[in-house]
Structure formats: structure tokens, C-alpha cells
Image 1 (cartoon, rainbow, N blue to C red):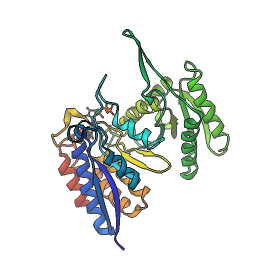
Image 2 (cartoon, rainbow, N blue to C red):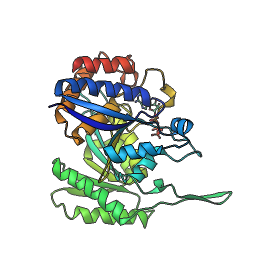
Image 3 (cartoon, protein in one colour):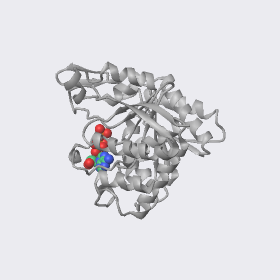
Image 4 (cartoon, rainbow, N blue to C red):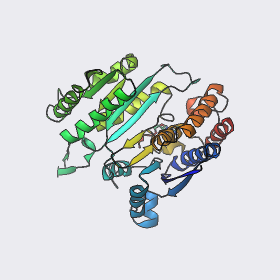
Amino acid sequence: MPHTHNITLIPGDGIGPEVTSATVAILEAAGKSTGVTFDWHTYDAGADAFAKTGEYIPKALYDSIEQNRVALKGPVTTPIGGGFSSINVTLRKKFDLYANFRPIKNLPGLKTNYPNIDLVIFRENTEDLYSGLEVMINPDIAQSFKIITTKGSTRIAKSAFDYALKHGRKKVHAIHKANIMKLSDGLFLRCCKSVASQFPDVTYAEHIVDNTCMQLVLNPYQYDIILTENLYGDILSDLCSAFVGGLGLVPGANLGAHCAIFEAVHGSAPDIAGQDKANPTALLQSALLMLDHIDEAQTATNIRTALDRVYTEGKTLTRDVGGTAGTRAFSEAVIAAL
Ligand code: ATP
């Protein structure tokens, strides 16, 4: 029986439209053999949306996510040091997408300095220094508020441990800086410890974030699941992406109780935007997480097999992973391999 999914699509800006259209083309091609079709509800966000509608996140976009409960999102540029608030952070907070799930795994055939990486990051997605609460005390003193709550910390810890149990993972490391931020990171750790006590079969450990950066580079294999706050999770995600070939590869899911938004770890990469250079693999792998989420595992498996074949053959890879192919040629190769 053919099955149509209503999905909110945010192409974003920078390399967003290129990686999004490549991903959509691959999903639609794969759906032909499994009887899955997609009704994409497409919206701008950020500066492009403001130019057209006078709103950075149009109400129609909010309504669409509310209704469809699933969105696939390209990167949206956040102005540095001023301008409008991050669209990514705003959407995560609006829909209470508290768990940012980022699996880091090598692709077959793609040689890196770190083979056989298989770790998962659970990043708290709605609190911490990303709460957006900042004030100028006077022209020379700025203050940003770091918000950590029992509710926010407990539910991200629960997500990480539930995932560990479901997927047979052995170890969860809570990453913190509670030696300096004794109250906020101290509360985060107490919540993690309390959740850990309910999961006796999963080993629990705590590492300080700066040491974690060194430990990751020396020996990433000691980590299985990384459980951390918003800012540390943002930084560690980019670091860990380098183990498997960089930001062009690593997917992400923003998960809440009612909605989910799937997006790559990378940003809008203005340095390569509009040049057919971007690697769409990160967004494609985010779309595979989305397919699993909407119970279309067969379509996801078919795409995964095709993607693995393209990487194993290594003939049509993008520049960021040592090839010479453009975004379009790469996506055509994946479609041909389907
Ligand atoms: P943000 O803070 O918005 O997440 P960022 O600071 O992490 O963004 P990116 O926009 O992700 O920065 O870009 C970082 C570097 O990685 C740039 O050199 C960019 O070209 C490269 N990069 C990011 N995404 C891709 C991609 N999909 N394909 C190829 N290169 C990419």
C-alpha cells in the first residue's frame, strides 16, 4: 500500500538549499521501490523568511511543524555578535526538543585516522548558556545566564540511558565542568547520577569537559555515549565529527515529546555555498534517522546500502572527503546505486 508522509521542509540558507534538494531527490527515488511518498511542506526561515514575510520564523512554519510533527531542516545562518536570535535554538525551545541526538560512525570505505568509531552524543538542547538570556550590566560588562534545571537535566539523562538500554550500549559518560560551575553543572551531575542509579546494567562515569577534549583525541574508543549540556555538546559534536571525516557527514535529530526536527550537525558553510561543493551526506543521514522515526525502516535501509556502496567504491565523493564530485553528481551516484 502506498504511504504518504507530510513532512515540513526547511531548506535553510548557505549550502542548505543544495544539500536539501539532494536529500529530497534521494528520498523520493528510494520511495519509488518501497511505495513511500512524501508531501513536503516547504518554508523559509531566518533572513530569507524575513525578507519575504517580515518574520524570521513565519507563523505558517510553526503551524506546519505543529501539525506534521516531523521536519527536515537545512542549516540557517545565525548572525554573529548581534542581529536576530538563532533560528535553530528558537525552534528547539518552541517545540521543547530537549534531546539532541548525534550518532558518530564511520562510513565504510572512507579512510580516516580513527577507524571503527561508533559513539553517540546526547546533548541537552533547551537550556544552559543557550537560553538566550543576556544583559549589558553597563557598556563594559555583559552577562549571560546559564540555566540548568532538574527537569532539563533529568530528561536528557533519561534519554541517554533509555537509548543505552534499548541499543545494548555499555557506558554513559556525563561531561561537565562542575569543579568550576559548582551549582549549575553540579545540579546537572546530581541529576545524571540519580538517573544512572536506575540503570545498574549501564556503566556510568563523569569526565570534565576540557579533559574530555584531550581524551577524545588520544583515545575516542573509551567513550560510548556522551551525555552533556548544550554548549559542551555543541563543541564536542564538531570535534567528534572529525573522527569520521568531518562536518559533511554527521547527522542529528532534535527530539521532543511531540515533535522532531532532523538536521545535520553542520552550519550553513557560507564559504562553499552556491558552488555545488557541499556534501549532502550529513543531511541525508539525518533523513535516515527521520525515516526510522516515521517507521519507514526499509526505505532507510535501501538508502543506507546505496550510500555505503558509493563510499566503498569511492569514485564519486565530494571534496571535503577527498573526492572531486559536486553535490549533484554525488546525489546522482547514490540514486544510481539504489
Ligand atoms: P554553526 O555554528 O552555524 O553550526 P559552524 O561554525 O559549525 O556553523 P559550518 O557552517 O558548519 O560552521 O562550517 C564549518 C566548516 O565546515 C566550513 O569550512 C564548511 O565549509 C565546512 N562544512 C560544513 N558543512 C559542510 C558540508 N556539508 N560539506 C562540506 N563542507 C562542509
